[in-house]
Image 1 (tube, helix red, strand yellow):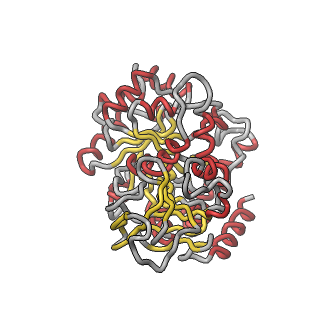
Image 2: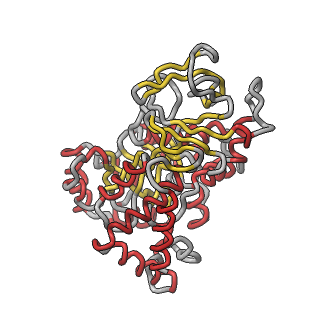
Image 3: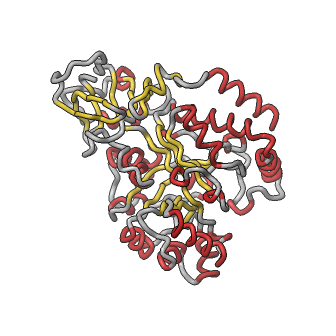
Length: 407
Protein backbone atom coordinates (compact mmCIF):
# COMPACT_ATOMS: atom_id res chain seq x y z
CA UNK A 1 0.00 0.00 0.00
CA UNK A 2 1.43 3.34 -1.00
CA UNK A 3 0.75 6.93 0.11
CA UNK A 4 -1.02 5.85 3.30
CA UNK A 5 -2.07 8.80 5.44
CA UNK A 6 -2.37 7.03 8.79
CA UNK A 7 -2.58 7.41 12.54
CA UNK A 8 0.89 6.78 13.95
CA UNK A 9 1.57 5.15 17.33
CA UNK A 10 2.47 8.52 18.88
CA UNK A 11 -1.01 9.87 18.10
CA UNK A 12 0.02 12.06 15.19
CA UNK A 13 -0.75 11.52 11.52
CA UNK A 14 1.78 10.89 8.79
CA UNK A 15 2.13 9.51 5.27
CA UNK A 16 4.00 6.27 4.54
CA UNK A 17 3.99 3.09 2.49
CA UNK A 18 2.79 -0.08 4.25
CA UNK A 19 3.70 -3.67 3.47
CA UNK A 20 1.31 -6.36 4.76
CA UNK A 21 2.52 -9.95 4.92
CA UNK A 22 1.04 -12.96 6.68
CA UNK A 23 -1.68 -10.89 8.29
CA UNK A 24 0.83 -8.49 9.85
CA UNK A 25 2.18 -5.07 9.03
CA UNK A 26 5.65 -6.00 7.82
CA UNK A 27 7.03 -2.54 7.06
CA UNK A 28 6.21 1.13 7.41
CA UNK A 29 8.49 3.04 5.06
CA UNK A 30 8.84 6.45 3.45
CA UNK A 31 6.16 7.24 0.86
CA UNK A 32 7.19 6.23 -2.65
CA UNK A 33 9.65 3.61 -1.42
CA UNK A 34 7.50 0.60 -2.35
CA UNK A 35 5.60 -0.65 -5.34
CA UNK A 36 1.97 -1.59 -4.77
CA UNK A 37 -1.25 -2.20 -6.64
CA UNK A 38 -3.14 -0.14 -4.01
CA UNK A 39 -2.66 3.62 -3.94
CA UNK A 40 -4.20 4.86 -0.69
CA UNK A 41 -4.11 8.57 -1.46
CA UNK A 42 -7.93 8.57 -1.34
CA UNK A 43 -8.02 7.24 2.22
CA UNK A 44 -7.07 8.06 5.77
CA UNK A 45 -6.19 4.87 7.63
CA UNK A 46 -6.75 4.10 11.31
CA UNK A 47 -6.04 0.99 13.35
CA UNK A 48 -9.17 -1.10 13.89
CA UNK A 49 -11.51 0.34 16.51
CA UNK A 50 -12.08 -1.68 19.68
CA UNK A 51 -15.50 -1.79 21.35
CA UNK A 52 -14.29 -2.70 24.81
CA UNK A 53 -17.68 -3.23 26.44
CA UNK A 54 -20.80 -4.27 24.57
CA UNK A 55 -23.94 -6.32 25.19
CA UNK A 56 -25.10 -7.97 21.97
CA UNK A 57 -28.82 -8.61 21.40
CA UNK A 58 -29.76 -5.55 23.46
CA UNK A 59 -30.70 -3.50 20.42
CA UNK A 60 -34.12 -5.21 20.69
CA UNK A 61 -34.70 -3.80 24.19
CA UNK A 62 -33.20 -0.36 23.78
CA UNK A 63 -35.41 2.43 25.06
CA UNK A 64 -37.32 0.14 27.41
CA UNK A 65 -35.18 1.36 30.31
CA UNK A 66 -36.26 4.99 29.84
CA UNK A 67 -37.02 6.55 33.20
CA UNK A 68 -35.88 3.45 35.13
CA UNK A 69 -33.04 3.18 37.61
CA UNK A 70 -30.67 0.30 36.93
CA UNK A 71 -32.13 -1.74 39.81
CA UNK A 72 -35.64 -1.29 38.36
CA UNK A 73 -34.78 -2.97 35.07
CA UNK A 74 -36.79 -6.13 34.37
CA UNK A 75 -39.17 -5.08 37.15
CA UNK A 76 -42.89 -4.37 37.47
CA UNK A 77 -43.26 -1.49 35.03
CA UNK A 78 -44.36 -1.51 31.39
CA UNK A 79 -40.78 -1.25 30.17
CA UNK A 80 -39.49 -3.68 32.78
CA UNK A 81 -42.10 -6.29 31.94
CA UNK A 82 -41.28 -6.01 28.25
CA UNK A 83 -37.57 -6.38 29.03
CA UNK A 84 -38.36 -9.57 30.96
CA UNK A 85 -40.58 -10.95 28.21
CA UNK A 86 -37.91 -10.45 25.55
CA UNK A 87 -35.16 -11.73 27.84
CA UNK A 88 -37.07 -14.94 28.55
CA UNK A 89 -37.65 -15.48 24.83
CA UNK A 90 -33.94 -15.04 24.09
CA UNK A 91 -32.98 -17.43 26.91
CA UNK A 92 -34.98 -20.25 25.32
CA UNK A 93 -32.49 -22.67 23.69
CA UNK A 94 -34.96 -23.10 20.83
CA UNK A 95 -34.13 -19.56 19.71
CA UNK A 96 -30.34 -19.85 19.43
CA UNK A 97 -30.43 -19.23 15.68
CA UNK A 98 -32.31 -15.97 16.25
CA UNK A 99 -29.88 -14.93 19.00
CA UNK A 100 -27.06 -15.45 16.51
CA UNK A 101 -28.99 -13.44 13.89
CA UNK A 102 -29.38 -10.49 16.28
CA UNK A 103 -25.68 -10.52 17.11
CA UNK A 104 -24.82 -10.86 13.42
CA UNK A 105 -26.79 -7.70 12.62
CA UNK A 106 -25.15 -5.75 15.45
CA UNK A 107 -21.64 -6.96 14.55
CA UNK A 108 -22.16 -5.91 10.93
CA UNK A 109 -23.33 -2.49 12.13
CA UNK A 110 -20.13 -2.12 14.15
CA UNK A 111 -17.94 -3.42 11.33
CA UNK A 112 -19.37 -0.69 9.12
CA UNK A 113 -18.06 1.81 11.67
CA UNK A 114 -14.59 0.32 11.66
CA UNK A 115 -14.87 -1.88 14.76
CA UNK A 116 -12.59 -4.88 14.29
CA UNK A 117 -12.56 -6.15 17.89
CA UNK A 118 -15.54 -6.40 20.24
CA UNK A 119 -15.64 -7.55 23.87
CA UNK A 120 -19.17 -8.93 24.04
CA UNK A 121 -20.91 -9.49 27.38
CA UNK A 122 -24.09 -10.61 25.63
CA UNK A 123 -27.61 -10.50 27.01
CA UNK A 124 -29.24 -13.90 26.78
CA UNK A 125 -28.10 -17.11 28.47
CA UNK A 126 -26.90 -18.58 25.18
CA UNK A 127 -23.62 -20.52 25.11
CA UNK A 128 -20.78 -18.03 24.58
CA UNK A 129 -19.55 -20.02 21.60
CA UNK A 130 -22.61 -18.87 19.64
CA UNK A 131 -21.35 -15.28 19.74
CA UNK A 132 -17.72 -16.24 19.11
CA UNK A 133 -18.84 -18.11 15.99
CA UNK A 134 -20.74 -15.04 14.74
CA UNK A 135 -17.56 -12.99 15.06
CA UNK A 136 -15.62 -15.58 13.06
CA UNK A 137 -18.34 -15.66 10.41
CA UNK A 138 -18.22 -11.90 9.84
CA UNK A 139 -14.49 -11.43 10.36
CA UNK A 140 -14.68 -9.40 13.57
CA UNK A 141 -12.49 -10.42 16.50
CA UNK A 142 -15.06 -11.29 19.19
CA UNK A 143 -13.92 -11.85 22.76
CA UNK A 144 -17.02 -13.14 24.55
CA UNK A 145 -17.84 -13.14 28.26
CA UNK A 146 -18.32 -16.54 29.92
CA UNK A 147 -20.83 -16.50 32.78
CA UNK A 148 -21.42 -19.05 35.54
CA UNK A 149 -19.34 -22.16 34.75
CA UNK A 150 -19.22 -21.80 30.96
CA UNK A 151 -15.44 -21.35 31.04
CA UNK A 152 -15.25 -25.02 32.09
CA UNK A 153 -17.30 -26.15 29.07
CA UNK A 154 -15.88 -24.23 26.10
CA UNK A 155 -13.30 -25.79 23.81
CA UNK A 156 -10.78 -22.93 23.98
CA UNK A 157 -10.99 -20.98 27.26
CA UNK A 158 -8.47 -18.40 26.00
CA UNK A 159 -11.12 -17.10 23.59
CA UNK A 160 -13.34 -15.93 26.46
CA UNK A 161 -13.29 -13.61 29.43
CA UNK A 162 -14.57 -14.72 32.83
CA UNK A 163 -17.27 -12.68 34.53
CA UNK A 164 -17.07 -11.64 38.16
CA UNK A 165 -20.54 -10.87 39.47
CA UNK A 166 -21.64 -7.30 40.14
CA UNK A 167 -21.65 -5.92 43.67
CA UNK A 168 -25.21 -6.95 44.54
CA UNK A 169 -24.46 -10.58 43.61
CA UNK A 170 -21.00 -10.94 45.15
CA UNK A 171 -20.83 -13.73 47.71
CA UNK A 172 -18.07 -15.72 49.34
CA UNK A 173 -18.97 -18.65 47.08
CA UNK A 174 -18.67 -16.47 43.96
CA UNK A 175 -15.24 -15.24 45.01
CA UNK A 176 -14.08 -18.77 45.86
CA UNK A 177 -15.22 -20.06 42.46
CA UNK A 178 -13.56 -17.13 40.71
CA UNK A 179 -10.27 -17.74 42.52
CA UNK A 180 -10.45 -21.33 41.35
CA UNK A 181 -10.73 -20.15 37.75
CA UNK A 182 -7.68 -17.95 38.31
CA UNK A 183 -5.62 -20.97 39.30
CA UNK A 184 -6.95 -23.27 36.58
CA UNK A 185 -7.29 -20.99 33.55
CA UNK A 186 -5.44 -17.71 34.30
CA UNK A 187 -8.19 -15.93 32.34
CA UNK A 188 -8.95 -12.30 31.73
CA UNK A 189 -11.51 -11.31 34.36
CA UNK A 190 -14.03 -8.68 33.27
CA UNK A 191 -16.71 -7.12 35.44
CA UNK A 192 -19.09 -4.23 35.96
CA UNK A 193 -17.27 -2.33 38.69
CA UNK A 194 -18.53 0.57 40.84
CA UNK A 195 -20.89 1.63 38.08
CA UNK A 196 -23.34 3.46 40.36
CA UNK A 197 -23.54 5.09 43.78
CA UNK A 198 -25.85 2.31 44.95
CA UNK A 199 -23.46 -0.42 43.87
CA UNK A 200 -20.63 1.23 45.79
CA UNK A 201 -22.87 1.45 48.87
CA UNK A 202 -23.76 -2.25 48.55
CA UNK A 203 -20.16 -3.45 48.44
CA UNK A 204 -19.17 -1.14 51.29
CA UNK A 205 -22.03 -2.47 53.41
CA UNK A 206 -21.42 -6.14 52.62
CA UNK A 207 -17.63 -6.21 52.55
CA UNK A 208 -16.45 -3.06 54.29
CA UNK A 209 -14.40 -1.97 51.30
CA UNK A 210 -14.69 -0.99 47.66
CA UNK A 211 -14.94 -3.51 44.85
CA UNK A 212 -11.43 -2.59 43.71
CA UNK A 213 -9.99 -3.16 47.20
CA UNK A 214 -11.90 -6.45 47.50
CA UNK A 215 -10.48 -7.69 44.20
CA UNK A 216 -6.98 -6.64 45.22
CA UNK A 217 -7.28 -8.41 48.58
CA UNK A 218 -8.37 -11.63 46.82
CA UNK A 219 -5.58 -11.55 44.23
CA UNK A 220 -8.06 -10.83 41.44
CA UNK A 221 -6.81 -7.39 40.43
CA UNK A 222 -4.01 -7.60 37.88
CA UNK A 223 -3.06 -6.74 34.32
CA UNK A 224 -5.59 -9.40 33.31
CA UNK A 225 -8.50 -7.62 34.98
CA UNK A 226 -10.83 -5.36 32.99
CA UNK A 227 -13.24 -3.07 34.84
CA UNK A 228 -16.36 -1.71 33.14
CA UNK A 229 -17.68 1.80 33.88
CA UNK A 230 -15.87 2.69 37.14
CA UNK A 231 -17.90 5.86 37.67
CA UNK A 232 -17.49 5.60 41.46
CA UNK A 233 -13.81 4.71 41.53
CA UNK A 234 -12.12 7.04 44.03
CA UNK A 235 -8.50 8.13 44.38
CA UNK A 236 -7.51 5.14 46.53
CA UNK A 237 -9.13 2.75 44.06
CA UNK A 238 -7.38 4.43 41.17
CA UNK A 239 -4.01 4.00 42.84
CA UNK A 240 -4.69 0.27 43.24
CA UNK A 241 -5.86 -0.09 39.63
CA UNK A 242 -2.77 1.69 38.30
CA UNK A 243 -0.40 -0.31 40.50
CA UNK A 244 -1.98 -3.62 39.45
CA UNK A 245 -1.92 -2.73 35.75
CA UNK A 246 -5.67 -3.35 35.44
CA UNK A 247 -7.69 -1.66 32.69
CA UNK A 248 -10.93 0.32 32.60
CA UNK A 249 -13.42 0.32 29.75
CA UNK A 250 -15.04 3.75 29.72
CA UNK A 251 -18.69 3.89 28.57
CA UNK A 252 -19.46 7.63 28.45
CA UNK A 253 -22.80 7.50 26.59
CA UNK A 254 -24.17 4.73 28.79
CA UNK A 255 -22.93 6.36 32.00
CA UNK A 256 -24.51 9.67 31.14
CA UNK A 257 -27.78 8.42 29.67
CA UNK A 258 -28.53 5.77 32.30
CA UNK A 259 -26.96 7.21 35.44
CA UNK A 260 -26.31 10.86 34.69
CA UNK A 261 -22.65 10.28 35.54
CA UNK A 262 -19.50 11.68 33.96
CA UNK A 263 -16.64 9.36 34.81
CA UNK A 264 -13.22 11.06 35.23
CA UNK A 265 -11.63 9.09 32.40
CA UNK A 266 -8.91 11.66 31.84
CA UNK A 267 -7.78 11.22 35.45
CA UNK A 268 -7.47 7.48 34.79
CA UNK A 269 -5.57 8.13 31.58
CA UNK A 270 -3.18 10.58 33.27
CA UNK A 271 -2.61 8.12 36.14
CA UNK A 272 -1.19 5.65 33.64
CA UNK A 273 -4.18 3.31 33.58
CA UNK A 274 -4.99 1.65 30.28
CA UNK A 275 -8.37 3.05 29.20
CA UNK A 276 -10.57 1.73 26.40
CA UNK A 277 -14.03 2.69 25.19
CA UNK A 278 -17.30 0.77 25.03
CA UNK A 279 -20.81 1.39 23.75
CA UNK A 280 -22.39 -0.87 26.42
CA UNK A 281 -26.15 -1.54 26.37
CA UNK A 282 -28.43 -1.22 23.36
CA UNK A 283 -25.92 0.89 21.44
CA UNK A 284 -23.68 0.08 18.47
CA UNK A 285 -22.66 3.69 17.76
CA UNK A 286 -18.92 3.55 18.38
CA UNK A 287 -18.34 6.96 16.86
CA UNK A 288 -20.95 8.51 19.13
CA UNK A 289 -19.05 7.01 22.05
CA UNK A 290 -15.75 8.40 20.77
CA UNK A 291 -17.14 11.90 20.35
CA UNK A 292 -18.84 11.84 23.74
CA UNK A 293 -15.69 10.61 25.46
CA UNK A 294 -13.82 13.62 24.17
CA UNK A 295 -16.56 16.18 24.79
CA UNK A 296 -17.16 15.14 28.39
CA UNK A 297 -13.51 15.61 29.25
CA UNK A 298 -13.49 19.23 28.09
CA UNK A 299 -15.34 20.52 31.17
CA UNK A 300 -14.30 21.18 34.76
CA UNK A 301 -10.82 21.53 36.19
CA UNK A 302 -9.45 18.10 35.29
CA UNK A 303 -6.69 17.86 32.64
CA UNK A 304 -8.10 17.80 29.13
CA UNK A 305 -7.94 14.77 26.87
CA UNK A 306 -7.01 15.54 23.28
CA UNK A 307 -8.76 13.98 20.31
CA UNK A 308 -5.61 11.98 19.71
CA UNK A 309 -5.81 10.66 23.31
CA UNK A 310 -9.39 9.52 22.72
CA UNK A 311 -8.56 7.89 19.38
CA UNK A 312 -5.87 5.97 21.21
CA UNK A 313 -8.43 4.86 23.82
CA UNK A 314 -10.68 3.65 21.00
CA UNK A 315 -7.88 1.62 19.39
CA UNK A 316 -4.72 0.77 21.32
CA UNK A 317 -6.26 1.24 24.78
CA UNK A 318 -9.04 -1.26 24.24
CA UNK A 319 -6.71 -3.78 22.61
CA UNK A 320 -4.01 -3.67 25.31
CA UNK A 321 -6.67 -3.79 28.00
CA UNK A 322 -7.59 -7.26 26.80
CA UNK A 323 -4.00 -8.42 26.47
CA UNK A 324 -3.78 -7.88 22.71
CA UNK A 325 -0.55 -5.96 22.37
CA UNK A 326 -0.50 -7.05 18.73
CA UNK A 327 -3.53 -4.87 17.93
CA UNK A 328 -4.53 -1.23 17.99
CA UNK A 329 -1.72 0.58 16.21
CA UNK A 330 -0.12 0.79 12.81
CA UNK A 331 3.46 -0.37 13.28
CA UNK A 332 5.70 -3.21 12.11
CA UNK A 333 4.77 -6.51 13.72
CA UNK A 334 1.23 -5.48 14.57
CA UNK A 335 -1.77 -7.26 13.10
CA UNK A 336 -3.04 -5.70 9.89
CA UNK A 337 -6.40 -4.60 11.33
CA UNK A 338 -6.93 -1.43 9.31
CA UNK A 339 -9.84 0.94 8.73
CA UNK A 340 -9.88 2.97 5.52
CA UNK A 341 -11.73 6.27 5.81
CA UNK A 342 -12.96 8.23 2.80
CA UNK A 343 -10.55 11.17 2.55
CA UNK A 344 -12.99 13.12 0.38
CA UNK A 345 -15.49 13.18 3.27
CA UNK A 346 -12.83 14.80 5.45
CA UNK A 347 -12.05 17.72 3.18
CA UNK A 348 -11.36 20.61 3.51
CA UNK A 349 -9.74 19.62 6.78
CA UNK A 350 -7.29 17.22 5.16
CA UNK A 351 -4.12 19.00 4.05
CA UNK A 352 -1.50 16.39 3.37
CA UNK A 353 1.30 18.87 4.05
CA UNK A 354 -0.26 19.83 7.40
CA UNK A 355 -2.26 17.10 9.11
CA UNK A 356 -2.89 18.96 12.38
CA UNK A 357 -6.62 19.37 11.67
CA UNK A 358 -7.20 15.79 10.62
CA UNK A 359 -8.27 14.47 14.04
CA UNK A 360 -10.92 17.21 14.20
CA UNK A 361 -12.29 16.18 10.80
CA UNK A 362 -12.39 12.52 11.78
CA UNK A 363 -14.35 13.32 14.94
CA UNK A 364 -16.77 15.50 12.99
CA UNK A 365 -17.46 12.93 10.24
CA UNK A 366 -16.96 9.65 12.09
CA UNK A 367 -19.63 7.06 11.27
CA UNK A 368 -20.54 4.35 8.75
CA UNK A 369 -20.55 6.85 5.88
CA UNK A 370 -16.89 7.62 6.51
CA UNK A 371 -15.69 3.99 6.63
CA UNK A 372 -15.14 2.51 3.17
CA UNK A 373 -12.93 -0.55 3.66
CA UNK A 374 -11.89 -2.67 6.64
CA UNK A 375 -9.14 -5.25 6.86
CA UNK A 376 -8.73 -7.73 9.74
CA UNK A 377 -5.56 -9.78 9.94
CA UNK A 378 -4.68 -8.79 6.39
CA UNK A 379 -8.01 -9.98 4.95
CA UNK A 380 -10.73 -7.74 3.59
CA UNK A 381 -13.94 -7.98 5.62
CA UNK A 382 -15.61 -4.77 4.39
CA UNK A 383 -15.38 -3.40 0.87
CA UNK A 384 -17.07 -0.22 -0.30
CA UNK A 385 -19.10 -0.14 2.90
CA UNK A 386 -20.50 -3.68 2.66
CA UNK A 387 -19.44 -6.83 4.55
CA UNK A 388 -17.54 -9.33 2.45
CA UNK A 389 -18.40 -12.58 4.21
CA UNK A 390 -22.16 -12.26 4.77
CA UNK A 391 -25.11 -11.02 2.76
CA UNK A 392 -25.97 -7.65 4.31
CA UNK A 393 -29.50 -7.66 2.91
CA UNK A 394 -30.24 -11.08 4.41
CA UNK A 395 -28.72 -10.04 7.74
CA UNK A 396 -31.02 -6.99 7.84
CA UNK A 397 -34.07 -9.04 6.79
CA UNK A 398 -33.46 -11.61 9.53
CA UNK A 399 -33.16 -8.84 12.10
CA UNK A 400 -36.40 -7.17 11.03
CA UNK A 401 -38.21 -10.52 11.14
CA UNK A 402 -37.10 -11.09 14.75
CA UNK A 403 -37.96 -7.53 15.81
CA UNK A 404 -41.47 -7.89 14.36
CA UNK A 405 -41.91 -11.14 16.26
CA UNK A 406 -40.71 -9.73 19.59
CA UNK A 407 -42.57 -6.43 19.46
